[in-house]
Amino acid sequence: MKKYLIIFTAAILLYGCSTEMDAVKETTTIAPQEGAQPSNSTARSAGGTVMMQAFYWDCPSGGTWWNTIAAKVADWHNAGVDAIWLPPATKGASGGYSMGYDPFDYFDFGDYNQMGSTETRFGSKSELQNLITTAHNNDLYVIADIVINHNGGGSSEYNPYTGGNTYTNFNPASGMFSRTLLDFHPNNEHASDAGTFGSYPDLCHDKTYVQGWLYNNSNSVAKYYKNTMGFDGWRFDYVAGYAPSVCKNFRDAVGGFAVGELWESAANLDTWTVAADMRAFDFPCYFAMRDALAANDLTKLNADMLFKRKPYNAVTFVSNHDTNEIYNGKMLAYAYILTHEGYPCIFYRDYEEWLDKNKLNNLIWIHNNKASGSTTYLYADNDEYVAKRNGSPGLVVYINNSDSWQQRWVETNWASTVIKDYTGNSTWEPTTQSGKWVQIQAPPHGYTIWSVK
Ligand code: ZN
Ligand code: ZN
Ligand code: CA
Ligand code: ZN
Image 1: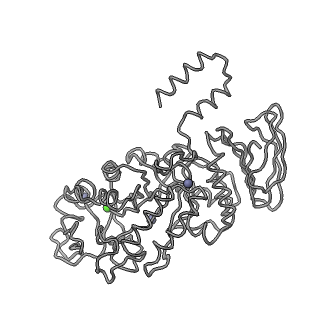
Image 2: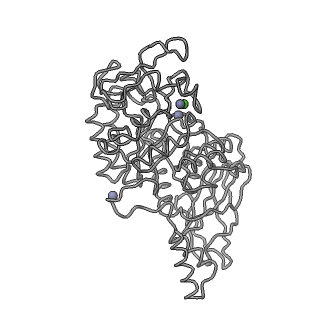
Image 3: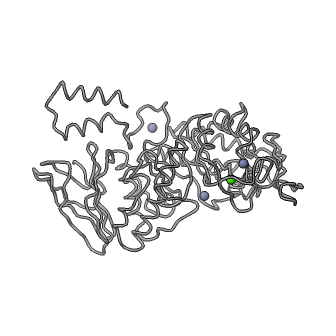
Protein backbone atom coordinates (compact mmCIF):
# COMPACT_ATOMS: atom_id res chain seq x y z
CA MET A 1 0.00 0.00 0.00
CA LYS A 2 2.77 2.42 0.99
CA LYS A 3 4.76 1.47 -2.10
CA TYR A 4 1.83 2.38 -4.37
CA LEU A 5 1.42 5.74 -2.68
CA ILE A 6 5.07 6.55 -3.28
CA ILE A 7 4.79 5.56 -6.96
CA PHE A 8 1.66 7.65 -7.23
CA THR A 9 3.30 10.67 -5.62
CA ALA A 10 6.17 10.29 -8.05
CA ALA A 11 3.70 10.15 -10.92
CA ILE A 12 2.15 13.46 -9.83
CA LEU A 13 5.61 15.02 -9.67
CA LEU A 14 6.48 13.69 -13.13
CA TYR A 15 3.27 14.81 -14.81
CA GLY A 16 3.03 17.86 -12.64
CA CYS A 17 -0.36 19.01 -13.81
CA SER A 18 -2.83 16.92 -11.78
CA THR A 19 -5.67 18.80 -10.20
CA GLU A 20 -6.82 17.76 -6.77
CA MET A 21 -9.76 15.97 -8.38
CA ASP A 22 -7.46 13.88 -10.57
CA ALA A 23 -5.43 13.03 -7.51
CA VAL A 24 -8.50 11.76 -5.72
CA LYS A 25 -9.49 9.68 -8.73
CA GLU A 26 -6.01 8.20 -9.14
CA THR A 27 -5.78 7.30 -5.48
CA THR A 28 -9.14 5.58 -5.53
CA THR A 29 -8.12 3.64 -8.63
CA ILE A 30 -5.04 2.11 -7.07
CA ALA A 31 -6.42 1.62 -3.56
CA PRO A 32 -8.07 -1.78 -2.91
CA GLN A 33 -11.56 -1.19 -4.21
CA GLU A 34 -14.40 -2.10 -1.94
CA GLY A 35 -17.10 -3.12 -4.40
CA ALA A 36 -14.75 -4.39 -7.09
CA GLN A 37 -15.71 -7.61 -8.88
CA PRO A 38 -13.09 -10.35 -8.60
CA SER A 39 -11.72 -10.72 -12.12
CA ASN A 40 -10.11 -14.14 -11.76
CA SER A 41 -12.53 -16.96 -11.06
CA THR A 42 -9.79 -19.16 -9.58
CA ALA A 43 -9.05 -16.46 -7.00
CA ARG A 44 -12.27 -17.06 -5.11
CA SER A 45 -12.68 -14.52 -2.33
CA ALA A 46 -15.18 -12.84 -0.05
CA GLY A 47 -15.57 -9.17 0.71
CA GLY A 48 -15.53 -7.88 -2.87
CA THR A 49 -19.22 -7.77 -3.69
CA VAL A 50 -21.96 -8.99 -1.32
CA MET A 51 -22.51 -11.96 0.99
CA MET A 52 -25.66 -14.09 1.29
CA GLN A 53 -26.71 -15.38 4.71
CA ALA A 54 -27.93 -18.74 3.43
CA PHE A 55 -30.28 -19.69 6.29
CA TYR A 56 -32.71 -18.35 8.85
CA TRP A 57 -33.83 -19.41 12.31
CA ASP A 58 -35.97 -22.56 12.04
CA CYS A 59 -35.38 -23.02 8.33
CA PRO A 60 -36.90 -26.41 7.32
CA SER A 61 -35.64 -29.45 9.22
CA GLY A 62 -35.56 -32.96 7.78
CA GLY A 63 -32.15 -32.80 6.17
CA THR A 64 -33.09 -30.94 2.98
CA TRP A 65 -31.52 -27.51 3.52
CA TRP A 66 -28.06 -28.14 1.98
CA ASN A 67 -29.80 -29.33 -1.22
CA THR A 68 -32.15 -26.33 -1.18
CA ILE A 69 -29.17 -23.98 -1.06
CA ALA A 70 -27.17 -25.94 -3.65
CA ALA A 71 -30.01 -25.37 -6.12
CA LYS A 72 -29.78 -21.58 -5.65
CA VAL A 73 -26.08 -20.80 -5.67
CA ALA A 74 -25.79 -20.40 -9.46
CA ASP A 75 -28.52 -17.73 -9.41
CA TRP A 76 -26.84 -15.99 -6.48
CA HIS A 77 -23.51 -15.93 -8.31
CA ASN A 78 -25.22 -14.45 -11.36
CA ALA A 79 -26.81 -11.78 -9.14
CA GLY A 80 -23.33 -10.68 -7.98
CA VAL A 81 -23.02 -12.52 -4.66
CA ASP A 82 -19.43 -13.61 -3.88
CA ALA A 83 -19.86 -15.58 -0.63
CA ILE A 84 -22.44 -17.65 1.25
CA TRP A 85 -22.61 -17.97 5.03
CA LEU A 86 -23.88 -21.38 6.18
CA PRO A 87 -25.31 -22.25 9.63
CA PRO A 88 -23.14 -24.29 12.05
CA ALA A 89 -22.80 -27.53 10.11
CA THR A 90 -22.09 -30.16 12.77
CA LYS A 91 -24.19 -32.16 15.22
CA GLY A 92 -25.74 -30.16 18.04
CA ALA A 93 -27.32 -31.29 21.30
CA SER A 94 -30.78 -31.23 19.75
CA GLY A 95 -29.70 -33.49 16.89
CA GLY A 96 -31.86 -33.27 13.76
CA TYR A 97 -33.71 -30.24 15.14
CA SER A 98 -30.62 -28.25 16.10
CA MET A 99 -29.84 -25.00 14.29
CA GLY A 100 -26.24 -25.83 15.17
CA TYR A 101 -25.65 -23.30 17.92
CA ASP A 102 -25.47 -26.02 20.62
CA PRO A 103 -22.40 -27.87 19.26
CA PHE A 104 -21.82 -31.39 20.55
CA ASP A 105 -19.53 -33.08 17.99
CA TYR A 106 -17.50 -30.66 15.84
CA PHE A 107 -16.63 -33.48 13.43
CA ASP A 108 -20.10 -34.97 12.88
CA PHE A 109 -21.37 -33.31 9.70
CA GLY A 110 -24.36 -35.64 9.56
CA ASP A 111 -22.59 -38.99 9.33
CA TYR A 112 -22.79 -40.37 12.91
CA ASN A 113 -25.93 -41.63 14.61
CA GLN A 114 -25.99 -39.67 17.86
CA MET A 115 -28.21 -37.09 19.58
CA GLY A 116 -31.19 -38.86 18.03
CA SER A 117 -30.23 -38.60 14.36
CA THR A 118 -27.58 -39.27 11.79
CA GLU A 119 -28.12 -36.29 9.48
CA THR A 120 -28.03 -32.79 10.91
CA ARG A 121 -31.07 -30.57 10.53
CA PHE A 122 -29.60 -29.46 7.19
CA GLY A 123 -28.62 -32.81 5.69
CA SER A 124 -25.83 -35.35 5.40
CA LYS A 125 -22.10 -34.84 5.17
CA SER A 126 -22.12 -35.75 1.47
CA GLU A 127 -24.94 -33.27 0.82
CA LEU A 128 -22.89 -30.56 2.55
CA GLN A 129 -19.82 -31.51 0.51
CA ASN A 130 -21.91 -31.36 -2.66
CA LEU A 131 -23.14 -27.89 -1.66
CA ILE A 132 -19.58 -26.65 -1.03
CA THR A 133 -18.38 -28.06 -4.37
CA THR A 134 -21.36 -26.55 -6.20
CA ALA A 135 -20.71 -23.18 -4.56
CA HIS A 136 -17.03 -23.33 -5.53
CA ASN A 137 -17.95 -24.23 -9.10
CA ASN A 138 -19.99 -21.03 -9.11
CA ASP A 139 -17.12 -18.87 -7.81
CA LEU A 140 -18.73 -18.61 -4.39
CA TYR A 141 -16.71 -18.52 -1.20
CA VAL A 142 -18.19 -20.62 1.62
CA ILE A 143 -18.21 -19.22 5.16
CA ALA A 144 -18.61 -21.61 8.11
CA ASP A 145 -20.37 -20.56 11.32
CA ILE A 146 -17.97 -21.26 14.18
CA VAL A 147 -19.57 -21.71 17.62
CA ILE A 148 -16.77 -22.11 20.16
CA ASN A 149 -17.95 -20.17 23.20
CA HIS A 150 -20.11 -23.00 24.49
CA ASN A 151 -21.09 -26.62 23.91
CA GLY A 152 -24.27 -28.65 24.42
CA GLY A 153 -25.25 -32.28 24.93
CA GLY A 154 -22.57 -33.44 27.37
CA SER A 155 -23.24 -36.13 29.96
CA SER A 156 -23.46 -35.35 33.65
CA GLU A 157 -20.36 -35.77 35.82
CA TYR A 158 -19.40 -34.71 39.32
CA ASN A 159 -17.53 -31.40 39.20
CA PRO A 160 -15.33 -30.52 42.19
CA TYR A 161 -15.11 -26.90 40.96
CA THR A 162 -18.86 -26.41 41.32
CA GLY A 163 -19.47 -28.95 44.07
CA GLY A 164 -22.28 -30.46 42.03
CA ASN A 165 -22.87 -32.23 38.75
CA THR A 166 -22.29 -30.51 35.39
CA TYR A 167 -23.05 -31.64 31.81
CA THR A 168 -19.42 -31.40 30.80
CA ASN A 169 -18.55 -34.97 29.79
CA PHE A 170 -18.38 -35.11 25.99
CA ASN A 171 -17.59 -38.37 24.17
CA PRO A 172 -18.53 -37.65 20.55
CA ALA A 173 -18.99 -40.53 18.11
CA SER A 174 -16.40 -39.07 15.75
CA GLY A 175 -13.83 -39.83 18.44
CA MET A 176 -12.47 -36.32 17.95
CA PHE A 177 -12.25 -33.62 20.65
CA SER A 178 -13.67 -35.43 23.65
CA ARG A 179 -14.01 -33.04 26.60
CA THR A 180 -14.35 -33.17 30.39
CA LEU A 181 -15.04 -30.67 33.14
CA LEU A 182 -11.44 -29.40 33.03
CA ASP A 183 -12.12 -27.96 29.55
CA PHE A 184 -14.98 -25.79 30.83
CA HIS A 185 -15.45 -23.05 33.40
CA PRO A 186 -14.98 -23.08 36.32
CA ASN A 187 -11.89 -25.31 36.37
CA ASN A 188 -8.39 -25.59 37.82
CA GLU A 189 -7.35 -22.58 35.70
CA HIS A 190 -9.96 -20.01 36.69
CA ALA A 191 -13.66 -19.43 37.30
CA SER A 192 -14.69 -17.85 34.01
CA ASP A 193 -13.73 -15.98 30.85
CA ALA A 194 -15.38 -13.01 29.13
CA GLY A 195 -18.89 -14.45 29.11
CA THR A 196 -21.23 -17.41 29.07
CA PHE A 197 -24.19 -18.20 26.81
CA GLY A 198 -27.15 -19.15 28.99
CA SER A 199 -26.37 -22.24 31.02
CA TYR A 200 -24.39 -23.98 28.26
CA PRO A 201 -21.01 -25.38 29.36
CA ASP A 202 -18.51 -22.59 28.63
CA LEU A 203 -15.31 -23.72 26.85
CA CYS A 204 -11.99 -22.66 28.38
CA HIS A 205 -9.78 -21.26 25.64
CA ASP A 206 -6.76 -21.07 27.93
CA LYS A 207 -6.42 -24.86 27.87
CA THR A 208 -3.69 -26.09 25.54
CA TYR A 209 -5.85 -29.14 24.86
CA VAL A 210 -8.79 -26.98 23.69
CA GLN A 211 -6.51 -24.74 21.61
CA GLY A 212 -5.05 -27.86 20.00
CA TRP A 213 -8.43 -29.24 18.97
CA LEU A 214 -9.82 -25.92 17.82
CA TYR A 215 -6.89 -24.70 15.72
CA ASN A 216 -3.36 -25.84 16.60
CA ASN A 217 -3.39 -29.60 15.87
CA SER A 218 -3.18 -30.99 12.35
CA ASN A 219 -6.68 -32.47 12.82
CA SER A 220 -8.12 -29.35 14.52
CA VAL A 221 -11.56 -27.97 13.77
CA ALA A 222 -9.99 -25.09 11.79
CA LYS A 223 -7.79 -27.36 9.65
CA TYR A 224 -10.43 -30.04 9.12
CA TYR A 225 -13.04 -27.47 8.06
CA LYS A 226 -10.58 -25.77 5.74
CA ASN A 227 -8.64 -28.68 4.26
CA THR A 228 -11.07 -31.62 4.37
CA MET A 229 -14.47 -29.93 4.08
CA GLY A 230 -13.37 -27.04 1.87
CA PHE A 231 -14.78 -24.13 3.88
CA ASP A 232 -13.07 -20.88 2.88
CA GLY A 233 -13.91 -18.44 5.68
CA TRP A 234 -15.27 -18.04 9.17
CA ARG A 235 -18.14 -16.34 10.98
CA PHE A 236 -17.52 -16.45 14.73
CA ASP A 237 -20.64 -16.71 16.88
CA TYR A 238 -21.00 -14.84 20.17
CA VAL A 239 -17.46 -13.51 20.38
CA ALA A 240 -18.47 -11.54 23.49
CA GLY A 241 -17.94 -14.86 25.30
CA TYR A 242 -14.17 -15.09 24.91
CA ALA A 243 -11.04 -13.08 24.07
CA PRO A 244 -10.53 -11.66 20.55
CA SER A 245 -7.19 -13.51 20.42
CA VAL A 246 -9.12 -16.81 20.15
CA CYS A 247 -10.64 -15.74 16.81
CA LYS A 248 -7.30 -14.40 15.68
CA ASN A 249 -5.50 -17.66 16.54
CA PHE A 250 -8.15 -19.72 14.73
CA ARG A 251 -7.98 -17.61 11.60
CA ASP A 252 -4.18 -17.38 11.70
CA ALA A 253 -4.05 -21.20 11.61
CA VAL A 254 -5.91 -21.43 8.29
CA GLY A 255 -6.30 -17.93 6.79
CA GLY A 256 -9.43 -16.75 5.04
CA PHE A 257 -12.12 -14.13 5.40
CA ALA A 258 -13.38 -13.80 8.98
CA VAL A 259 -16.13 -11.88 10.75
CA GLY A 260 -17.27 -11.81 14.38
CA GLU A 261 -20.72 -11.38 15.94
CA LEU A 262 -20.58 -8.72 18.64
CA TRP A 263 -23.59 -6.61 19.59
CA GLU A 264 -21.70 -3.53 20.69
CA SER A 265 -21.03 0.14 19.96
CA ALA A 266 -19.03 1.36 16.97
CA ALA A 267 -16.15 2.29 19.26
CA ASN A 268 -16.08 -1.18 20.83
CA LEU A 269 -16.37 -2.90 17.44
CA ASP A 270 -13.53 -0.74 16.15
CA THR A 271 -11.34 -1.89 19.04
CA TRP A 272 -12.45 -5.53 18.72
CA THR A 273 -11.80 -5.75 14.95
CA VAL A 274 -8.28 -4.45 15.48
CA ALA A 275 -7.60 -6.88 18.36
CA ALA A 276 -9.11 -9.89 16.54
CA ASP A 277 -7.66 -8.76 13.20
CA MET A 278 -10.93 -9.41 11.38
CA ARG A 279 -14.28 -7.89 10.51
CA ALA A 280 -17.40 -7.53 12.62
CA PHE A 281 -21.09 -7.25 11.81
CA ASP A 282 -22.04 -3.57 11.92
CA PHE A 283 -24.72 -3.68 14.63
CA PRO A 284 -24.57 0.12 15.19
CA CYS A 285 -25.47 0.57 11.50
CA TYR A 286 -28.35 -1.90 11.88
CA PHE A 287 -29.71 -0.15 15.01
CA ALA A 288 -29.37 3.30 13.40
CA MET A 289 -31.35 2.19 10.31
CA ARG A 290 -33.99 0.55 12.51
CA ASP A 291 -34.38 3.67 14.67
CA ALA A 292 -34.24 6.09 11.73
CA LEU A 293 -37.02 4.29 9.87
CA ALA A 294 -39.16 3.59 12.96
CA ALA A 295 -38.99 7.19 14.22
CA ASN A 296 -39.09 8.70 10.71
CA ASP A 297 -35.90 10.60 11.48
CA LEU A 298 -33.25 9.91 8.85
CA THR A 299 -30.78 12.19 10.66
CA LYS A 300 -30.25 9.13 12.86
CA LEU A 301 -28.25 7.73 9.92
CA ASN A 302 -25.59 10.25 10.94
CA ALA A 303 -24.86 8.04 13.97
CA ASP A 304 -21.48 6.45 14.63
CA MET A 305 -21.16 3.13 12.79
CA LEU A 306 -18.33 0.66 12.29
CA PHE A 307 -18.20 1.19 8.51
CA LYS A 308 -17.67 4.94 8.99
CA ARG A 309 -14.61 4.22 11.17
CA LYS A 310 -13.23 1.15 9.41
CA PRO A 311 -15.01 0.49 6.07
CA TYR A 312 -12.93 -2.63 5.44
CA ASN A 313 -13.80 -4.11 8.86
CA ALA A 314 -17.58 -3.77 8.63
CA VAL A 315 -20.11 -6.35 7.44
CA THR A 316 -23.39 -4.45 7.12
CA PHE A 317 -26.83 -6.10 7.26
CA VAL A 318 -30.55 -5.29 7.46
CA SER A 319 -31.76 -8.47 9.19
CA ASN A 320 -30.39 -11.86 10.17
CA HIS A 321 -31.37 -15.13 11.87
CA ASP A 322 -31.37 -13.44 15.29
CA THR A 323 -33.00 -10.11 14.58
CA ASN A 324 -35.55 -8.75 12.10
CA GLU A 325 -36.97 -5.47 13.35
CA ILE A 326 -37.07 -3.30 10.23
CA TYR A 327 -40.60 -3.75 8.89
CA ASN A 328 -41.43 -0.49 7.11
CA GLY A 329 -38.88 0.75 4.65
CA LYS A 330 -36.76 -2.40 4.55
CA MET A 331 -35.86 -1.71 0.91
CA LEU A 332 -34.66 1.75 1.97
CA ALA A 333 -32.35 0.04 4.45
CA TYR A 334 -31.02 -2.23 1.67
CA ALA A 335 -30.58 0.84 -0.55
CA TYR A 336 -28.55 2.35 2.30
CA ILE A 337 -26.18 -0.58 2.95
CA LEU A 338 -25.77 -1.39 -0.75
CA THR A 339 -24.67 2.16 -1.58
CA HIS A 340 -22.47 2.77 1.46
CA GLU A 341 -19.14 1.39 2.60
CA GLY A 342 -18.75 -1.99 4.30
CA TYR A 343 -19.39 -5.50 2.95
CA PRO A 344 -23.18 -5.99 2.75
CA CYS A 345 -24.80 -9.25 3.83
CA ILE A 346 -28.21 -10.08 2.28
CA PHE A 347 -30.58 -12.14 4.43
CA TYR A 348 -31.98 -15.27 2.77
CA ARG A 349 -35.65 -14.59 3.58
CA ASP A 350 -35.45 -10.99 2.41
CA TYR A 351 -33.99 -12.13 -0.89
CA GLU A 352 -35.91 -15.35 -1.52
CA GLU A 353 -39.24 -14.73 0.23
CA TRP A 354 -40.05 -11.29 1.58
CA LEU A 355 -38.78 -8.53 -0.70
CA ASP A 356 -38.69 -7.91 -4.46
CA LYS A 357 -35.75 -9.97 -5.73
CA ASN A 358 -35.44 -7.87 -8.89
CA LYS A 359 -35.09 -4.70 -6.82
CA LEU A 360 -32.46 -6.36 -4.61
CA ASN A 361 -30.59 -7.59 -7.70
CA ASN A 362 -30.62 -4.03 -9.05
CA LEU A 363 -29.15 -2.74 -5.76
CA ILE A 364 -26.52 -5.50 -5.76
CA TRP A 365 -25.55 -4.53 -9.32
CA ILE A 366 -25.28 -0.87 -8.32
CA HIS A 367 -23.18 -1.86 -5.29
CA ASN A 368 -20.83 -3.96 -7.36
CA ASN A 369 -20.46 -1.49 -10.23
CA LYS A 370 -20.91 2.04 -8.88
CA ALA A 371 -20.49 2.14 -5.10
CA SER A 372 -16.79 2.82 -4.70
CA GLY A 373 -14.64 5.37 -2.95
CA SER A 374 -15.14 7.36 0.21
CA THR A 375 -18.53 8.75 1.24
CA THR A 376 -19.64 12.37 1.55
CA TYR A 377 -22.88 13.02 3.46
CA LEU A 378 -24.87 15.64 1.55
CA TYR A 379 -28.20 16.05 3.32
CA ALA A 380 -30.41 14.52 6.03
CA ASP A 381 -33.67 15.52 7.68
CA ASN A 382 -36.59 13.56 9.11
CA ASP A 383 -37.61 11.91 5.85
CA GLU A 384 -34.84 12.58 3.34
CA TYR A 385 -31.23 11.45 3.14
CA VAL A 386 -28.64 12.11 0.40
CA ALA A 387 -25.03 10.94 0.21
CA LYS A 388 -22.43 10.40 -2.49
CA ARG A 389 -19.64 7.90 -3.09
CA ASN A 390 -16.50 9.52 -4.42
CA GLY A 391 -15.01 6.67 -6.45
CA SER A 392 -15.04 6.46 -10.22
CA PRO A 393 -17.76 6.78 -11.40
CA GLY A 394 -19.27 6.84 -7.90
CA LEU A 395 -22.92 7.59 -7.20
CA VAL A 396 -25.41 9.79 -5.41
CA VAL A 397 -28.10 8.01 -3.34
CA TYR A 398 -31.33 9.81 -2.45
CA ILE A 399 -33.58 8.10 0.12
CA ASN A 400 -37.07 9.50 0.63
CA ASN A 401 -39.23 8.26 3.50
CA SER A 402 -42.02 10.82 3.02
CA ASP A 403 -45.45 10.26 1.46
CA SER A 404 -44.72 12.30 -1.68
CA TRP A 405 -42.07 12.78 -4.34
CA GLN A 406 -39.19 15.00 -3.19
CA GLN A 407 -36.56 16.85 -5.16
CA ARG A 408 -33.38 18.56 -4.11
CA TRP A 409 -30.31 20.33 -5.50
CA VAL A 410 -27.08 18.53 -4.55
CA GLU A 411 -23.38 18.93 -5.34
CA THR A 412 -22.04 15.91 -7.24
CA ASN A 413 -18.51 15.01 -8.36
CA TRP A 414 -19.43 15.48 -12.02
CA ALA A 415 -19.30 18.74 -14.04
CA SER A 416 -21.50 19.20 -17.14
CA THR A 417 -22.34 15.49 -17.22
CA VAL A 418 -25.57 13.67 -18.02
CA ILE A 419 -26.58 11.43 -15.12
CA LYS A 420 -29.41 8.98 -14.63
CA ASP A 421 -31.11 6.99 -11.88
CA TYR A 422 -29.86 3.41 -12.09
CA THR A 423 -32.81 2.08 -10.09
CA GLY A 424 -35.27 3.13 -12.78
CA ASN A 425 -37.46 4.82 -10.18
CA SER A 426 -36.97 8.24 -11.81
CA THR A 427 -36.99 8.90 -15.56
CA TRP A 428 -35.02 12.15 -15.23
CA GLU A 429 -31.71 12.39 -17.06
CA PRO A 430 -30.41 15.76 -15.89
CA THR A 431 -27.11 17.37 -16.87
CA THR A 432 -24.99 18.59 -13.96
CA GLN A 433 -23.97 22.24 -14.01
CA SER A 434 -20.37 23.28 -14.67
CA GLY A 435 -20.14 23.73 -10.87
CA LYS A 436 -21.32 20.09 -10.43
CA TRP A 437 -24.70 20.93 -8.90
CA VAL A 438 -27.80 19.14 -10.15
CA GLN A 439 -31.43 18.65 -9.14
CA ILE A 440 -32.47 15.06 -8.41
CA GLN A 441 -35.69 13.49 -7.16
CA ALA A 442 -36.87 10.41 -5.24
CA PRO A 443 -40.29 8.74 -5.04
CA PRO A 444 -42.39 8.43 -1.84
CA HIS A 445 -41.03 5.76 0.51
CA GLY A 446 -38.44 5.00 -2.13
CA TYR A 447 -34.99 5.84 -3.40
CA THR A 448 -33.01 6.82 -6.47
CA ILE A 449 -29.33 6.17 -7.16
CA TRP A 450 -27.65 8.47 -9.67
CA SER A 451 -24.47 8.01 -11.64
CA VAL A 452 -22.93 8.96 -14.95
CA LYS A 453 -25.16 7.84 -17.81
ZN1 ZN B 1 -18.97 -16.26 -13.12
ZN1 ZN C 1 -10.76 -20.30 30.63
CA1 CA D 1 -17.05 -17.98 27.35
ZN1 ZN E 1 -26.32 -14.75 17.43
